[in-house]
Length: 332
Image (cartoon, rainbow, N blue to C red):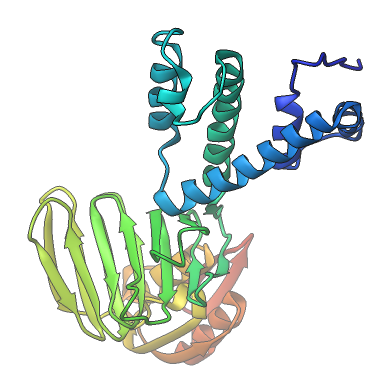
């Protein structure tokens, strides 16, 4: 249905829809028809566009809280209609009708800014057996493991390189910038890069950081509990105890879930089977407990699980049976 706007009516919604990029062709025709009615309408349109752009810049630069701004605006606008408008807006010769229109417009602008800021939040989630490789605006890399949730604000990122890992596991290869540190928030734990690559894994009652290169600081919120990790150090947050501990990392395959590189030196097959289950999602069953303790020395790089199991069988003289993605090991 075509809308007809009187001389005193301004199609704020159409203008805001145009600013948000959601204007339909029919609505665009209505807006152009209103603008063509008079030069005054064109002037109003241009003024609204200019106010919107200035407000958007103000919201970005000053980190505008749109809800708080609207509360202040509404308190001023509707507390007492008899208050001289020029005292509120510091503008001369503005009547109450124009102030009311300006209030409506500013509400729309504040809402639009809020939407604009929310749309800047980038959320990435991975499902079962799904992994994603992300390149952040600064060139830093994030590789997300399966069942992980990660977010960052793409508009604020250049000024404050802050990201969140809400669940799951991720490997970070950070572009170091001493003037603008990179930090990761996960619950009450803050992980700060000091020029590094590292793995971060969130489990039900713990968060583990293993450093590959450079240095990483772990800081628990609300306390002075902080540790500094060097290459091949492991830091663990015990969520229940609210304690941070540091120790040498003994798991050389901690990042095999993404680089598909596995190294074993006289490792029990039970350990190997747990790695394969975590990385490839397969079950390995044993004929008896003696086979669980059988030792393997091997190096696998970018091998399929079928290739790995075949090599294990050949190396240790074992029979391997593949049944619907599950593998059974037994003596020949």
